[in-house]
Length: 91
View 1 (tube, rainbow, N blue to C red):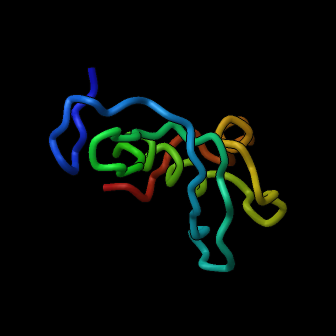
View 2 (cartoon, rainbow, N blue to C red; view 1 turned 90 degrees about the vertical axis):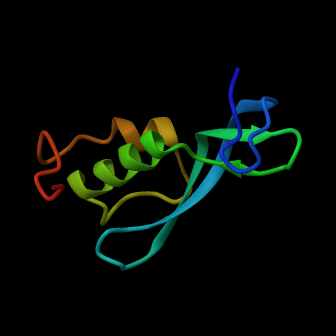
View 3 (tube, helix red, strand yellow; view 1 turned 30 degrees about the vertical axis):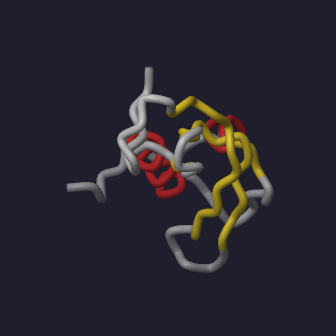
């Protein structure tokens, strides 16, 4: 059972949705398909949980984004080899 962070409903469900992300260098935005998301049946809100947001942001900081395709699926994005093992810029 999932709880909707927006309305508190117990009818939230896992989903795969499209998200849009600005690259860390600000050069452009990309479309990320099939992102792990939450969909609330009651209020209609669709969103990504904090852990998924952090995972995407870390990955975008640690890969070469110059040749990154758009759209890209979440799984394809996460499979791009990293320059660094972790995000050393995070506090």
